[in-house]
Image (cartoon, chains in turn blue, cyan):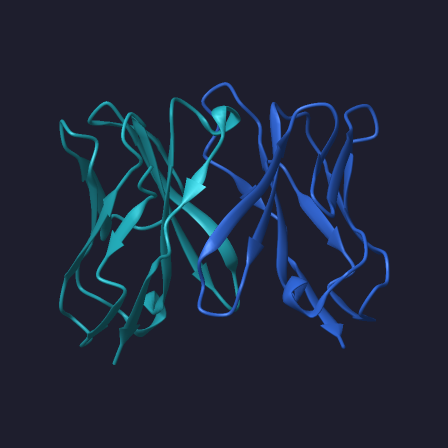
Length: 110
Length: 113
């Protein structure tokens, strides 16, 4: 069973700061997802990665398959980025759905 | 294109009752997965359906069941509700498997009293 660790668990930063959230997993995967969850519950899929790096607007996600590690970066952070960010992995080959980290609670203060 | 639709959004039930939740996937998506989210346990995989067949199942008691219809819509059922079943239930759809991309619904918040 894959173990997914996220850090930090909580992060408060000032508007404009560069944010990094880390995710490590224990077993090889076929895909890693970064998810965003706002109060109220709905989850939005930000990125799906199997290698390398992806960028969307101010968000950048990277993955190092050899080190079993991924990072989510937010540049020029804004209060609307305040949310819970969740890393989830899929091991493939008929694995039991996604395995999730416990999430990072991010608060961006104006 | 329309997203993943879950109904109802909120539900209050009494211990011992049963409940049915519905999930309509993105058009063309054949895989529907269900997840339970609680403050204590976080997000946990319940089961996945693909082409009307349960393909995978998480570690939940038999009171949790589901099915998928020929149009890929899925329902999950929880019988003999317990207080601990209070949670946000999320479904997600994918074309084939989660490494083809994944779209989540807004969830159904179930409260058991």
